[in-house]
Amino acid sequence: MIPVARPWMDEQEAEAARRAILSGWVTQGPEVAAFEREFTEAVGASHACAVSSCTTALHVALAALGVGLGDEVITVSHSFIATSNAIRYCGATPVFVDIDPATLNIDPALVEAAFTPKTKAILAVHQLGMPCDLVSLTSIAARRHVPLIEDAACAIGSAIEWEGEWHRIGRPHGAVACFSFHPRKLLSTGDGGMLTTNDAQLDRSFRLLRQHGMSVPDAVRHASDTVIFESYPIVGYNYRMTDIQAAIGREQLKRLPAIVARRRELAARYQDALQSIDGVIVPREPRWARTNWQSYAIRVGAWINQQTLMQRMLDAGIATRRGVMNVHKEPSYPAGTWRAASGLTQSEDAQHTAVVLPLYHQLTEEDQDRVTRTLAAVIRDL
Image (cartoon, rainbow, N blue to C red; front, side):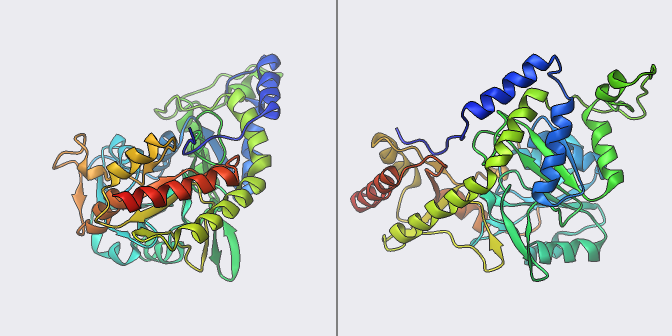
């Protein structure tokens, strides 16, 4: 079976985990602190705060920015459900706008019309690693005096052109960017997340929220020569990353340049092989974006049944995935739990026409050629 994704780990990660386990400090400690420092250097941010997942990172970001009961957050329905769930955790309402079909990202042209007096933030998703139009979105956020939060779950290693220079996603360009280390992402710690910001006060809030609202972290108290009693100035959460995960993450971070380069190479091979197949639309980068190709999602013609295509690929020993879900179609999002500020035609069309093909660092060219040959044959037979 050719899987749709596979993390790249070997003896280095195993030894890093062993080192953390034998150190006697396995929860949030020195490895987490080191991972945070190294992550800031990798993306160009001033601060990084490690947490247990990207979902918890999004929740922490929203809470730290004051999103609460009765507020609205502008975002997309066309995203993994965690994006909207984090908004609802705060008691706020997701306000959905449609996507740009070329990038599957939030359409900045529709954002202005979504604002109401209740709007507290914009939450933009770098879908499948493809960067959003941050130039437009940051301009809107500044004009409207609301923070821009980047859901960068898939976007480690992606970049945008910013004032004539290439900037890594996570610098960040909004108030905060949130990353995932789930096994389907370029870097994995089993699971885990990271928040990056250039605002020291926001970073302080993140650190309070991730550890029960504790004023002094365990690592500081236990390393002190004097007795320190912590206090709990706010109600926080248990969203800590373990040192075992962080040790693995530090090794994974060293691999990032090679992982991005290999994925871009494989994506280029897909582009060449698939663009001539009738019924297949290949993804394209905007001139101002460099994607990490976290996922390679084609669009198929309306006459092609997505589920039938995926089943026949699976029968041939090749795993695929639908592109992205639409939250407003899920039973956990009944009427009244969300609002649409525009039609969601492009979002709904993408859900039924996008198919993610296998793409990961260890994918061989022979297996990739098998994917493209099989896809072409299946489409011919439909």
